[in-house]
Image 1 (cartoon, rainbow, N blue to C red):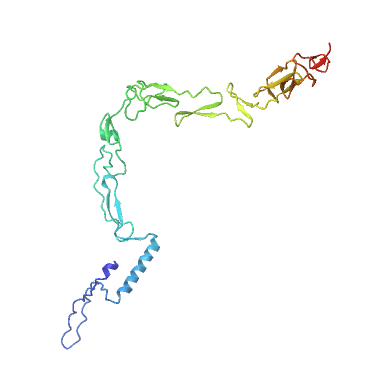
Image 2: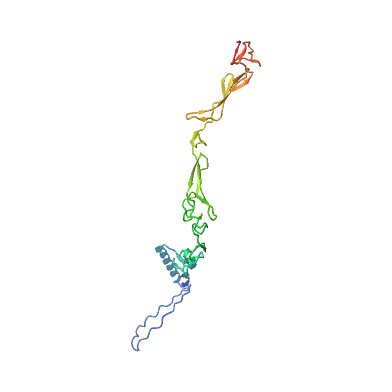
Length: 312
């Protein structure tokens, strides 16, 4: 509007009718309002532009919407009727585009009747025995004929329940079906054979989940029965049962219900050896008395018998 104001000239109205001679003439009628066009040289243009700006600001404050310039694009209509144009300068919401004319809906993946829906009433627009699918009319499937058709997940050649493919040819929960014709359906078995996992079936995803058994700290799952048991991995230290017998414990034990039990292996020292720190050490004597290779105590007290020097 401000640009239109800058090229204005004032055109006066027509002259009024003069009065009768000798008397004052009657007042002539008011001429039509002059067409206003602005000239940049006019001193009133700046004041007029300021008033226009003020009014636009007030409109934006009252409506909460900005004055949209004419260059902003807009669109009207749906589907095949959608047209683009520009917003009319001034208050927002007015678009200079005109929607196209709706036509009969057909199966082409286009909203022909411009109602916001595409290829609705697929069977009606394609005709009997056919369904519209992704813009193409295809022959509709018949559940139970052994051929997977449109809107069928499976077709095993029958309409029996609990065989994996139900009476409307949808895959039943807990089953998987092949895409062959006819479909071959197999029931999902979630048991993975591991006693230390919790097996479950996810009906939404139609698959199995296997979650490990959670045991407390210091425990482990027994793969035989899936029970949590105490981990026995701290056996007693290797030692000496006597001066001539060494013992070594298995590094892994079993939990008896109250304590860990470890199996052990004992070693009898040779008659001229002695157990020290769990190991039979050669030649250290009989009860700390040196002996020779024949087991005879070197102090003259006879032979080493049961760890002791004896003359008998």
